[in-house]
Image 1 (cartoon, helix red, strand yellow):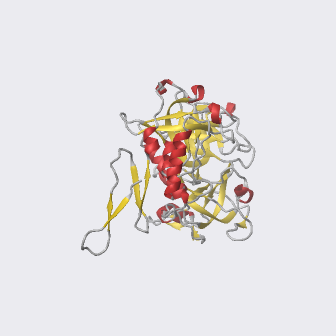
Image 2 (cartoon, rainbow, N blue to C red; image 1 turned 180 degrees about the horizontal axis):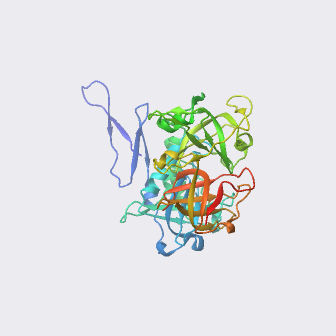
Image 3 (cartoon, rainbow, N blue to C red; image 1 turned 45 degrees about the horizontal axis):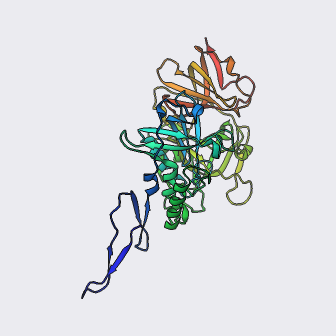
Amino acid sequence: MKRFCRCLLGLLVGLTLVACASSSSSSTISYSSSSSTVTTLNTDQTDALKLRAANYQEMDFIEQYAGEVSLLGCVDGDTANFRTLNKHNVTIRFLGIDTPESTALVQPWGKAASDFTCKALMGAHSIVIEAEVAVSGFLDSTGSRYLAWVWYQSSETSDYRNLNLELVEQAYTKDYTATGSAYYSYFRLASDNARHSGRRVYGEDDPNYDATPIGVPVTAYEVVHNYDAYGPSATLVKITGLVVAKSAYSVYIRDVVPTINENGEEEYAGLYVYGGYSSDLTAFAKVGRIISFYGRPTKYNGAIQISDVKTKSTGDYAYTIISSDNEITQIPLDLSKDLTSYYGQFVTTNVLVEQVVKSEDSIAFTVYGKLEGTDITVSIFANAKLYPMYQMNRIEVGSVYQVSAGWNPGFASQDYDMVLGDNTNSDYANFKKIKE
């Protein structure tokens, strides 16, 4: 921490502040507060902590509790998806930290923490994840996410940095490291400095979080085409839409009334509405209903969605069920258009199946293939909460299926990702073979 010396200068009127800090090799980040003082957050502990030597390029995290991985996608400030050496897809919950929420719930500093994590991982030359099983176990309380320290190397010649520790040092999270951890002392020192700074989660207002308790009325079209007016500040909005599909605890909605777009055409925009791990959203957001509700526009893996949905039936920010049993028209994927314009929509298209991969720890599975007649690659995810559940062993590689699913940016090497929704009956209409 820099100290400032006050020096009286002879006949000059007033006082001048002179910085008398000694030189240091540690990285620092300085911020000016409204009172003209300067508070500095350093990365002394992150700079000092080194990843133990090992041949991580030849290690698989699932089998050896450590190893180099490739990034599949960022989730939030303390969660990300990776692929291991032996092609295990894993969701990692970062050990020792708990950043503010930015997915199902949106909190101050949540998006900033998420952006910090994603920038570090997406720009990394190499990423190593390391479990500490004897101290913290291998899986979190949900049983679906692995616990690990996440190390990233920004260039081929730079040292690996512990991202968990760096998030603590930059006051994006408080420290929850177990006392038996090999890194406990580093986290304690990092936490003490961040806490004394009073920055971010230690009391500073998030300038990019809109805490105004007013739900701005918007359409899905307005959110999709004017995201920068709502998303970066996590503005609370009130949105009305037709529920066209359900997937686990989340839903897809579509505008009730079309908007005339810049080409003079009618456009029904759609959005994915994330419900997290609770059935509170799907309890009222039934397929075929037109509903009005409050939430905050956010992005996940580059696609716009609605998060932090208010699920109260009475009082402030209560949802409204406007009508039920409305007809749902499928939207065909037009391959002549920009396919990124369909993000968040529940669409129908034909897919040539090339591979089916079962999840290791549930009945969920992923289908890999190409849009019929093209080289456009897609992954089709069937989550374990689907009802009725698809029979994976009945899916035939080499056949063409008509697929109705949510359309999203692709993970890893796939161009696009599709998420299957519940079937409204037992004929599996959302995933139906049409050609051998």
